[in-house]
Image (cartoon, rainbow, N blue to C red; front, side, top):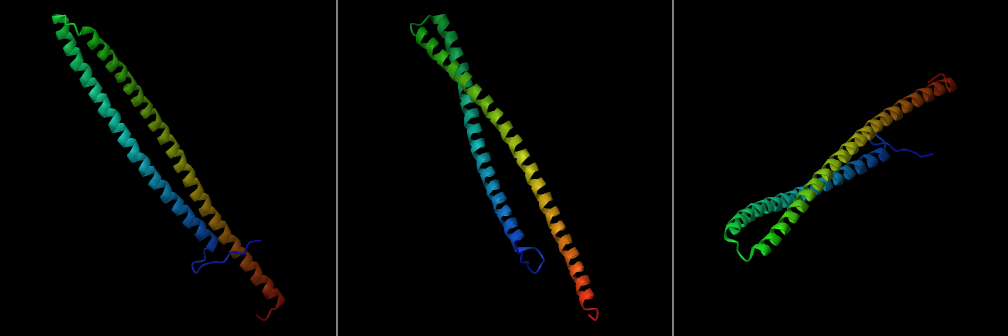
Length: 154
């Protein structure tokens, strides 16, 4: 059976250690979450920048294409090839953007689930502390009664 030493505040030392460990783990989790959020925002900005560039390039090439139609330039086939490549890149960038949004949604759902479980754990810890305190009080009363029964003069 474990013997729980108590601090001046009446809280068992092991519970203080567990609370410190919990606080440190939560602080570590928050730091990782902030780092993930920063990286996510960097990736999102890069994707948006590339999407903007691709759209600008598509518009620019469409205009060039129209001018070439009028001129029937010998470079027409090469331009069409480049335009198709830009369209492919634009579709891929759009797909990456959608994937990013999906992963962001999943991240938020997991974070919410984590926060709920953490709140549940905190509530259970508080309940445990109350039960331990109540148990100690009951045992102390019982010991005092037994002590009085043994030595009624006290």
